[in-house]
Length: 218
Image (tube, rainbow, N blue to C red; front, side, top):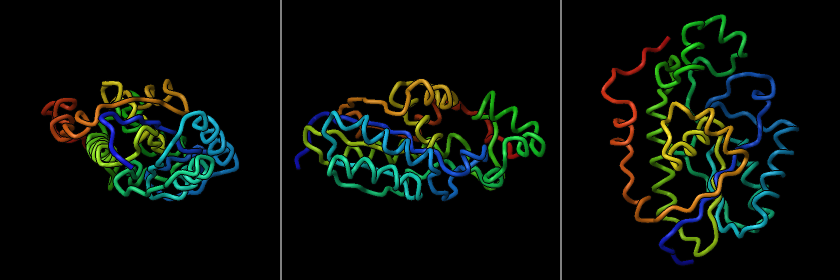
């Protein structure tokens, strides 16, 4: 299948996991979809059914793959695992319920709500690191993929989804939560392949974060 000058992209939000349903921070932990998440995966597949999808990209975790499988099966599309699309690593925050997180890390929990780029989890990634990795891998993979006139679907976990939405809409990465929520379960976007090829994520991350020191691990 040939490359066209533009790439039609469908960003899809991964279904919720068992930890999401239990109000636990999931991050990059590999947790399966819950019953609600399975229903959401089917809904995503239905929402994408009106437009031809040739390829479904997804991260390596079980929930992302299950959501991508639902989309690919309905479309009879190819499916590809992309390690670089792994959700942001939340380190020692992963598995904590919201109430536990707020009790153990009161300063960090406030920062994560109000200015997520200002804090990072112990043994986890900073938001800028996750943004650089996810957006960089997404741009490279999309630019190189062959889909002809069909779309390429990308299934992402919540933070990765929000960061990708921010990138495509030109929003600051710190607004990932609101951007992801406003986008809904699926965001359609057409990007010029030349623009994807020109992405320089390290410069972009510096532009968005300035020259401030690395956020402290709280």
